[in-house]
Image: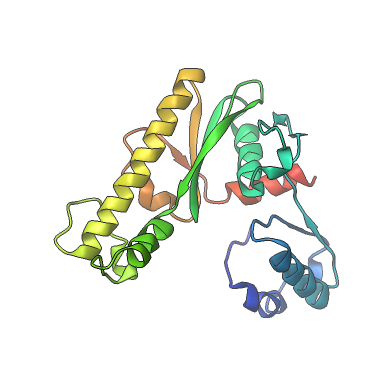
Length: 220
């Protein structure tokens, strides 16, 4: 599997540069950004590859997992896909922690029932809120991505503080989940997974492509 990233405005050029693009027979996607971004993806894929894009949607039931939302379509498709892939891999109770733009925690029990979850701001969002909602907390956002040691300047203090906040949120969510499913395996995914994993005090296996792995289950 080839992995990579690009901005939505660069998608057409990125697709056009793929050496294996002539062999691509199908395009599957999951989108949490709304109809405008979906339309942009559809257009780029159609123009460059001559294919239609199939978008995954959160469903009531798929791949042995039963959606816990009363309105299944309102569950973020990224969370849904990660749960499908996590449950398929573990074959039993799984706690999926996704560390992206938002940090989410979801529990699927041994029978495939989604027992609910939690959502909190991601590291970038937390740090941005300090810049926009305060007058005196000023720092270079790029410099905040440090470890969790006590900071000796504002950037380090914000970096460590937001990391501890994220780790504390995930620890609390995992403890709550353990009350319902004591043996649930913890899987960690998302762009900040490795950064946050260093601050966790419980075992978690990192699965960088968990959301993408769920596409083949949602759209077999």
